[in-house]
Image 1 (cartoon, helix red, strand yellow):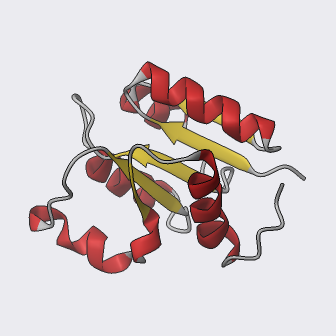
Image 2 (image 1 turned 135 degrees about the vertical axis):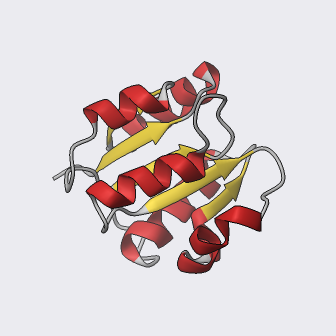
Length: 128
């Protein structure tokens, strides 16, 4: 069965690119530019991985993540960021996740797929 990926990134180009590369590699992709719409449509225990932008104008990726964890505490996550990551008020999130859950943009397709593999399967690279 194909793995289901939820992508939330406010940049349309990034969203489209992620959607295309993931579908080309056999994933079923649900993508949103609006985090509130993504929350409204979120289905607990349905997605295999959440790929999430950290900096979004209406709701930060960290705030979105906290909301998702209330609904699905087993949700696997991959944060994407183009900027610096600030530890500060999000130290609970940083300390609860492995370092490979954070990816700096731009990222190559191969790098993204390897990160996803490590997060979902522990590095077995057998999903596509």
